[in-house]
Length: 98
Image (cartoon, rainbow, N blue to C red):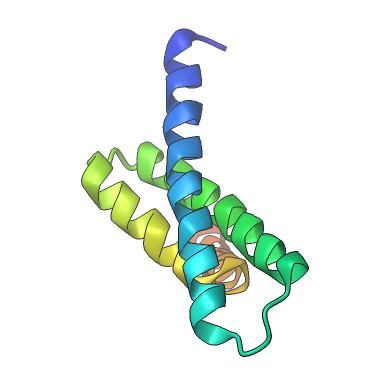
């Protein structure tokens, strides 16, 4: 991997970090009984989803401000919603290619 590839992964990790915060905020806003375990699961699963979205933002060469906004929003929505939307979009895109 070249230096540019590492920089892109670092950027995607930053996007994922913002998504972790979004996942934490979402959990705190939507729960009545706090659980440290669920807080961490929701936060880090949102971070993974935000990382994936960040990679797509880099691929489509979106400005950092837009990519941070998108990653944070998808982090707030959570991993389940993000992965479902990615799956739907990717399947549609792949069907168009076949």
